[in-house]
Amino acid sequence: MADHVIRTAEAEDVGRLARLLQETYAFYGEKAPVAEDLLIERLQRYLGANPGFEALIAEQDGRDLGYAIYAPVFWTSDCQLSLFLKELYLVEDARRCGIGRDFMVELASIALERGWSRMIWTVDRHNHKARRFYDSLEGTQALDKVVYLQSDSVMKRLATAGGSRFPYSFRV
Image (cartoon, rainbow, N blue to C red; front, side):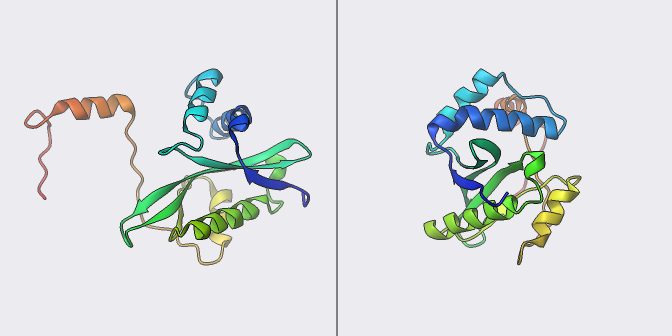
C-alpha cells in the first residue's frame, strides 16, 4: 500500500473516525460505548478543541486505512509537553504494510515541530502484534507502569465521599 496518504483529520472526517472507532471496539471485543450519533457529536466537540484531541487518517483512493488519535500531555520528568498517542488503529488488510510506521514518523514530526519532548503511548498487554511493532521502533522503551482508570460513576462516588467519609487515609 505504497500510495497511501496520511493527513490531518478535519471536522468533516468525524463520521469516518466514528466508523473506524467502532471497528476498533469490535477488534478489542467491546461494544461501542455510545450510539454512533452521540459518538460523532463527541468527536465533533473535541476534535481540534483545547482541551481535546487531534487525529491523523490514513487513506488510499478514498478508502480509510486507519487513524491515530493523540493529544498533548504534561510530562513531569522534564516539565514539558509530550505527545500522548491514545490510539493507533489500522484496518486488517492495511497491517504489516508500513502504514503504522508511517503514522509514527508523522507523529514524531508533529511532536518535534511543536517542541514536545517525547511520545508516550500505551498498549494492551495481550496485544502481542502491536507490542512487537512498537518494540521494533528504534529507541522505544517499555515503561514499568500500570495504567489505572476510573469511570464517571466511580469518580462521582469518589468526589462526593469527601473528607472523613472517604474510607482510606493518605499520608503525604
